[in-house]
Image (cartoon, rainbow, N blue to C red; front, side, top):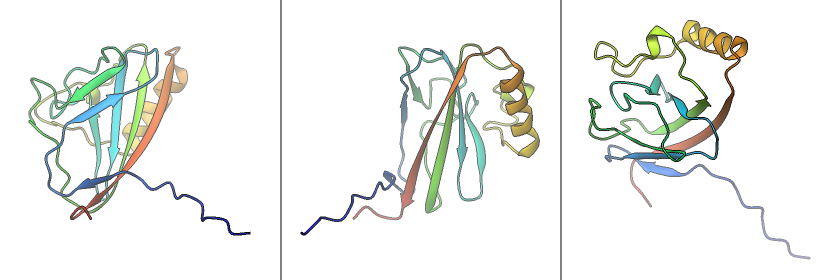
Length: 143
């Protein structure tokens, strides 16, 4: 018997230094989005952030970034490698100072202390939440 090789589930590919908009659509009942990004050397809060998404409310389970009023007009990736996104959707926004959009820290950096604070709050809160994950491979040129 000849059996074809199994299909590899490779991450979607995006181009280096190409301007993008991000469309997030989640099948969830919660209305507030917290979007964390991890790149090769970076850990950013994308939403809510002054850089990309000052408003973290989903509308009809969707959100588009960058938003009107954000500091950035587009999203670009400047390093080849994997970009990972963790979306956490909640019934209510989390009242953490570093999650308040501001121009001093346009895209807050999440570090171990902030991540611990976030997970502690999610664990103790009666907040109903769900998490979603997606990764992309950033490449120099499309084949």
